[in-house]
Image (cartoon, rainbow, N blue to C red; front, side, top):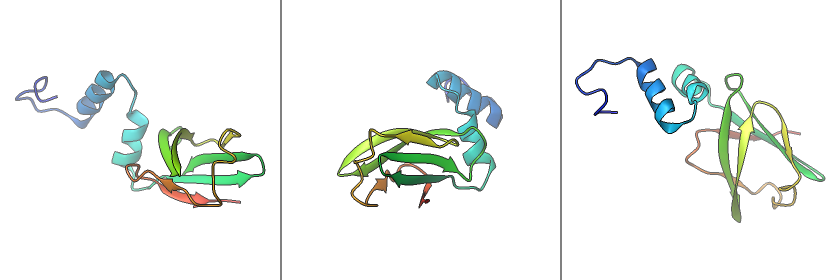
Length: 112
């Protein structure tokens, strides 16, 4: 970044595009969420008899974030603003005892 923009005045849009291009991933929704709003996204979840369901709330439309959760072992899910269901992790929880990896700036809320 410093080499490519050496002694240049750049805009935030240029820096954001540079990061997305060089990472090979479109970070625009993440930049919109964390740079342009004061909202902290909420990882909402509910546990049903045979499934674990989750989504993101309180965030910009279309946001998609990989999330790591731990309860004895660590799992990774990709949370979006739509409810998603995982039967694979239905038995993974020991009651409500799980933690969101602290490197993710999200709040957590159990919903019924």
